[in-house]
Image 1 (tube, one colour):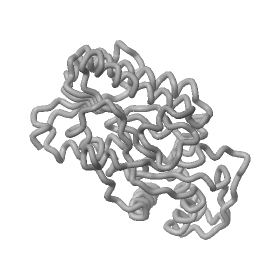
Image 2 (tube, helix red, strand yellow):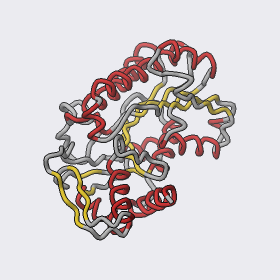
Image 3 (cartoon, helix red, strand yellow):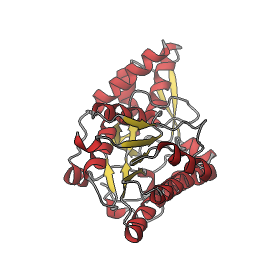
Length: 312
């Protein structure tokens, strides 16, 4: 595509889960100058490292996917770190992008930025109607500040930046570390480990009643690049698949696909998190033609097959 011709593109988090799909799709679009900073070389929480990164790479476009993030347990253990690190990374990258006069900055926010009791489906204009769910609030608010900065910088400096709000992501290459993983990899690991160890039950956090929406990571990567190519406003845009499933239904589906036939025990002393999550996705399709293509069961099967193969 002509949009990417001769563009120098910096992808923070490009070696990570979502970033790996974004980088693959950039290469398929014939983007030849892609820069992926590694944490051992650049600490993006440190302003001097951010300045050096811009000096070294001289990007035209920055796609900021880098984040310190985890599931409910990790958020409960690291509220200060997740707030500070995510805020400082984003704020400094945008400020240095402005000073370096880059063409476009693409910031990835999070569904955790939405108020705890947002009416379903979540519309972009609902973002300021209340406080986020408590266990995710520090992370969600840090990411929401990128929207504030994007809008303020466009107003004062004419800086072209956009802010996307993806729903929970899943897919091959996800993080399966039980200390920091999100719900789908955590449940897949529990089922497969129990099956392989001949265990007859697994324990799941919460009541099973909350609902979630999930977006296949490869689809999310396509949405991010379509927005980069076609969207030029600092008004927020949701990225999602447009469906809702309860955690109870989710674990039953994962158990079915993995072949785990044991008992599911609910630990109701553990938090449920936000009661419901489901995005209104009409704006993304209207503004830049994005619509998720991967069915949920198909995406789950691909994720489970990837993890099963990885542990053999």
